[in-house]
Length: 220
Image (cartoon, rainbow, N blue to C red):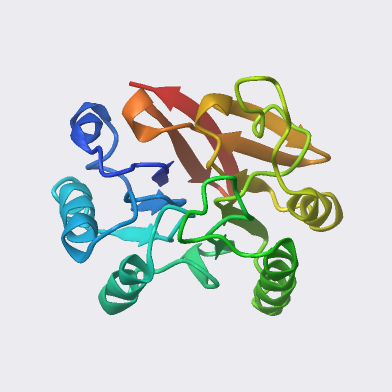
């Protein structure tokens, strides 16, 4: 079985037609930034576009998403933010949306201390569910990796997210937020992937076969 993951849609969905595995996947994981300061009509359009290919969706708001986006995801029962979901026997995913403050004052920003609290609380619940393998879907990337660099080479990711990954070592971390830092990195035994903006064609295929999780960064 496999899942497809991506993020940073920003209301641009035309590339969905070019992802060959999308319709056959167990489901779709969206890591954040579905919209641009999203209106109710914008989020309905994005979800509808994904549902045209695969109706099983888990999604969470990013820093560019409003409360209206979060409410719509809640109403559909697909919000991954602050949730732990079982994807398969032994395989779980926990979601942390939004981001730390940016220079742009976007609607979904929270303090670093809030991200830290969310991570700790969600991980405690995930541990109690005794998954063999845990995926972390988090919009905010960890600091000082290949995945958090803006155009001038400055690292802008979260030290708190990095410290959490170093200490807890989830098998896979799906992140985004920094569009120009598409790529793969590792922190200890954790694989970390940022597929970049969906409009750029990046996505992740997650395969879970015989209790073993693998993830591949792909491009249309």
